[in-house]
Length: 362
Ligand code: SAH
Ligand code: SF4
View 1: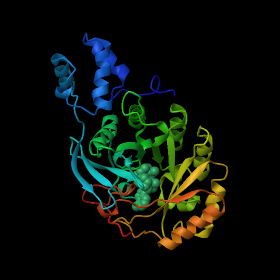
View 2: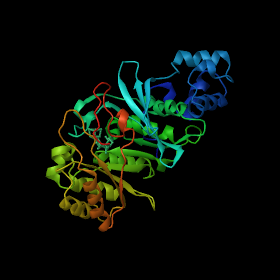
View 3: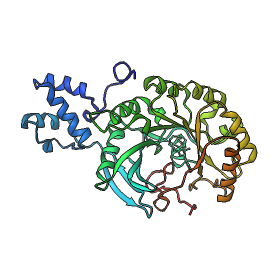
View 4: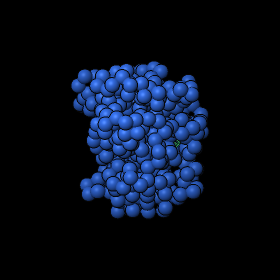
């Protein structure tokens, strides 16, 4: 991995510092190096961000940390648990913005939790089927705000649960906030901190080609990549995803072929099924052609309705038939169950508070 030495930009907030950056800082204060390790351990391994609770630090150092602004950069405004035990946390920032993060226990083994996190307040990409896109970009989230979602998420778990996967599938386009996301990835996977496996952290993108290359280079292809495909012909994709007018399908699939995937790893293709838009037999056939030679697994997501659009999912038997057309031609295809529907918490369904989409998918 080339990061962090040469590419990472400076942290936005003390809680986004890496151990080496803490070592430097405590040295400047005349403290021994191990204090830097202790601070990183409190914040990232133990999830304690209040300096007063960092019991093995001397009082003077705790005061320094308080003066530096060590503390929670975001907080939980409200939490809603749905019937299927998916838990949506509404996150508030000091400047009054709101984003959402969702904890999704694995079906069949609730101890293993996937957390879906946000990377921007809103999104600039303007996909027509997406509530975040319709709202536009309000601001970037900081590295600290991105990581703190997971630190807060961990506090909401039951005693035998742990976060095993983190997916950047909440609000925002993570690769449009590359620097903050890259630092967050280093922090989330740091062995002395949260210690997630890189392969269990998924960055989902609508197709920012240069940043896909950069992610592959910076993390040696170890971070799991998910691509929001949603259409297989340029004219269709450009209609529902404006990003395609800049980076068309040929450019995107070239980037996927270049992505330095390790053996046995596959790129996730997300395909939100929209009735009459991208759900024909021809679409299925052309998807197989488009993805030929790229190691992929396909996730079909029946579209969750949003208030600003008439687009909707095909009925479930049609979804199954679409899946069959793909599997018959050799693709591995999963239908992503929309979980947490009753609190509008399903991943990819996150919107501004009060403007939440309503789901018609039972
Ligand atoms: N911006 C990134 C990640 C966030 S969106 C991206 O687009 O990949 C996470 C996933 O949810 C994406 O695949 C997105 O296309 C999908 N999604 C957005 N709106 C949706 C909706 N209304 N119904 C179903 N999936 C949706
Ligand atoms: Fe942004 Fe992703 Fe929504 Fe498109 S689907 S508007 S890229 S969050």
